[in-house]
Image (tube, rainbow, N blue to C red):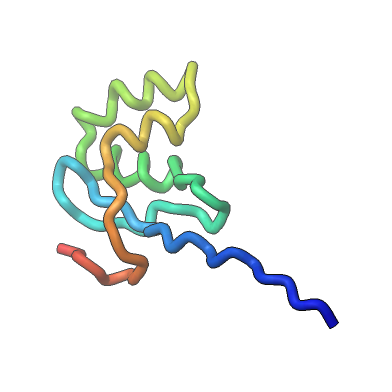
Length: 85
């Protein structure tokens, strides 16, 4: 029986930090490298309505994920409570 070696999966963080308040959110879907833009915009609208307003206007013409990801940054690690404030 031939054994096939698969490459090790890349351990990317599925969490992001809001650039405005620093809270760590589980902002990544289980789809490889695909942010959950709707969930991230929900946080931004609820906590930062003034800053989120221009992003909401942009979602009419561009991808919601692209707009939302400008206000967050990916955090290293993959545990839910890591670096949470």
